[in-house]
View (cartoon, helix red, strand yellow):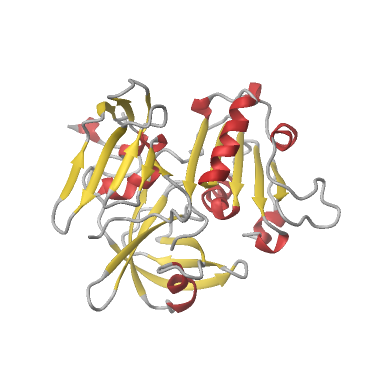
Length: 96
Length: 251
């Protein structure tokens, strides 16, 4: 395992900014500035605003409105497992 | 497709880069700023962070995220690391890593908690402890750009000895207002007595909500939560409040 473990100390969760490094292994764009729509409650917001729990294996990002799981990322030795079933859409800003 | 370009970098995945420690200086009793030389470093925006990877001889590897303390474009980057006594990574970075040693860096990452020098609205920066680091990068970038965008900084810290970047903050900058919120011990003559950040602090030393400032809050999760709730109660729009949380300890 080489999962990024942000300095989360005694606090429960981080925010979606902590996904920037791990997701940069998979995507050529910065996904944290993208707007995601929660599949559970329909609310939208930047991926950076999700609540990220880093204590288990991998990273779990939950909706800040309803706490539903939006995204999960587990990094194995040679494979990254990305579960995005909690996101209906992810709108990525592109430069002109 | 030509339109596939993304702000800040070419459309390619980030790679780990070798970083050589060039200089380390003391910020406080427990914080050090590391100047690293990184061949291939393309620069960063203020507010972005990097992942640092350390690998032991037996192959064991561990990573941490650190905010960049400045947004330089000379192939070098600055990290400020707070030593956590029982941490795995931070004591190594603050005390063991020697000038000339190599670590691995991936970044810059994060495109949301950033300030672009093209922004013209007033800015309110709210720092809790070492949450000052990415906000200082914004202040330094504003300075370097000669920007006159009005900035206000509310810096919450336990006591005066915990203050990061003391020389830079004392030097100040035209159009930058700084207020210290001491939580445990305030110095003589301080305009407020010691205590946690309150809505009165935000109302008195921040910007009124109808100025429509962009607000950046960085600190431990509890601090960020409390500040965000107070800002909303004062009428600041949620989409104008950008937060970055981290733990006071951990590594």
